Image 1: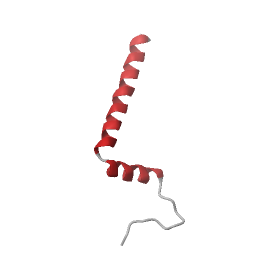
Image 2: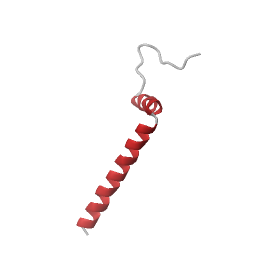
Image 3: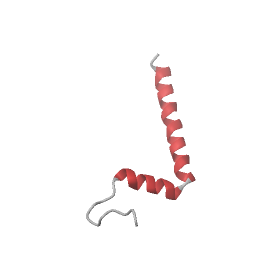
Image 4: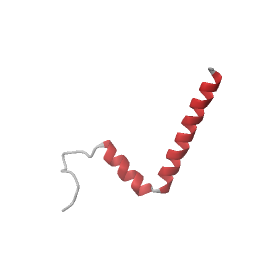
Length: 51
């Protein structure tokens, strides 16, 4: 039994993103970590500037 959807039903974006993340492995996790750190840095910087 395969887990593929029927031809007329497109897989959801979440499923595609998870499949892509599993396929790319460490690069995806690195990008996620860098994005998280960047967002945190922006929020801390904004809170410092607006205090």
